Image (cartoon, protein in one colour):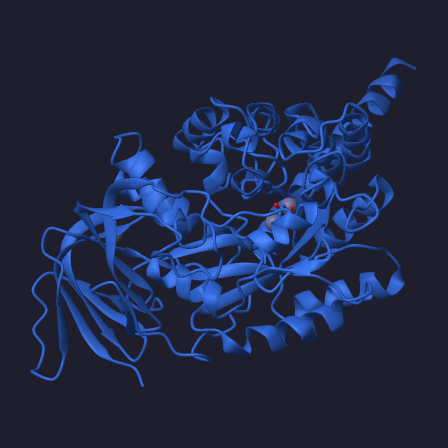
Length: 488
Ligand code: DUC
Ligand code: ZN
Ligand code: ZN
Ligand code: ZN
């Protein structure tokens, strides 16, 4: 059952514009945005005076119910989404992992997992092997199943990793079916070598994780993926950009006109690697993710890149494991399941570190936490906006209140939190998802099965552009031949 709600007197913020206005919500949809909307008595009135009314966050990068490194993440589609809603995120895009290389089996498995959803979600899909069936299935996923992005892992040798030949095939296929290619950019062969080196040196603790896969290897894979995408002439989305070196590769490519999107994640923006050196294994192991959280300084640089548009949107890579799971690697960091939390914390952390600190405007906040994601994945303005006709996924944030993070109070099932003890400015007081108030007075009112699958359409408009770009690319290749002929 949906509600009829009037949000009164707040500052309504879209990526392009902000104004003091009322927002009328009926049957899950925003139907009106203007000052002084008059309504009847039955309508639920929410007073937002002095507060910001913004599109709910969209997390472009999560792993819920992910079977990985010999175990499964502790948050499923219900607990992870409930946590998200408590932190002002109203949609996420999760990564479908094929089953034995079969995309359709992977898709079926994720449809099953997501039946318990309490908020809207979409899917990316990983490509972990290559044959004619995979190629055919990619097309089916795009045309029939609502997937418009495929991720290629250049790391996790022996598991998810693919080689350059497969990456090229995948890039070509993405281009021809109208999908966006995404990469996890670390050189998996070199990481494997770096890990062996650490073990030989007797470094078996969580700090060995960071030392074995330095920024150099992230930069190499980022540069390689960018160049191969440039060679195929198709857009590229680089997930979890963690280092200055990788970010600079994206900056260079964008400056030259290549369509590359860079996604930093909350942990990479606000944490540094010092936790990995904690003498207590469990405290250190909770920070293990890939690519690793970098040394102090990288996060600030990534924030600056976001504020100047070099990077475009913020994800989390939410992928949680309990201490008992992290303990698989107590004698060998290579066995620590990789992943950190963030789906509940992202909206608050970005507000605190970037808006409250004066680095970006409130409109930019909306852009990097919601609107840009909706645009990139082709679901704007159904999502990512508060406009008549948009889905009623809305948060009300009080800039004069504060938030606190602790595993004692968070809504994830994880027994730890990498942001433990963080106190910051700005608090999401109300979350409205699908036209229902699901978070209010620090209480969740979520319903299993209420979340919708959001199909993401293929990129016809982007690909019109590609055909044009292709023409100039081909003519640039021919230019030397023509000049040579001219000289004859
Ligand atoms: N990195 C992680 O830390 N977890 C999930 C997968 C990944 O690439
Ligand atoms: Zn406007
Ligand atoms: Zn990854
Ligand atoms: Zn990930």
